[in-house]
Image (cartoon, rainbow, N blue to C red; front, side):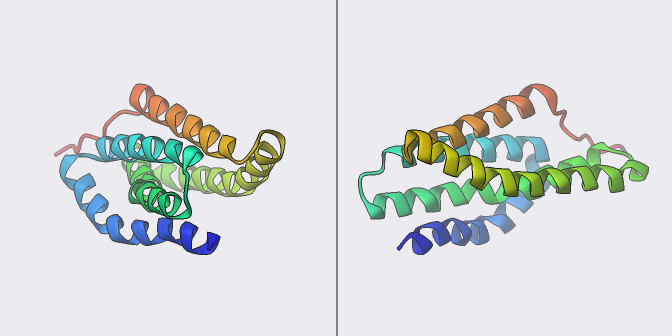
Length: 147
């Protein structure tokens, strides 16, 4: 049952990825990234209070609608904000950060769940997403194509 609930997130990613990529080209990478981070934050927090398996699964699907756009949009934005000469280095750093997060995330999530309860994993994840949203809003410029 948990596999179904968490695979709902992946299914939602598949559904929205083409749409989000298209929207990035139309309204801007930074704007889509901000929308995805806000949506992911707002849909992650209610998972802490889910009262049934089906509501939790629906909330996982909702989160997936936004999570799927974060990494591709961020990578596209990074690729456009740095010079061609810097791209290899910057993509190496972002890939390393992603793998570090993939390692530390489950370990810290397990530690939080063990120490404070499962509910706090979703609250902490929401807090991290909110921190990223604020960082992107205040520190990341929009890419403006030069003609």
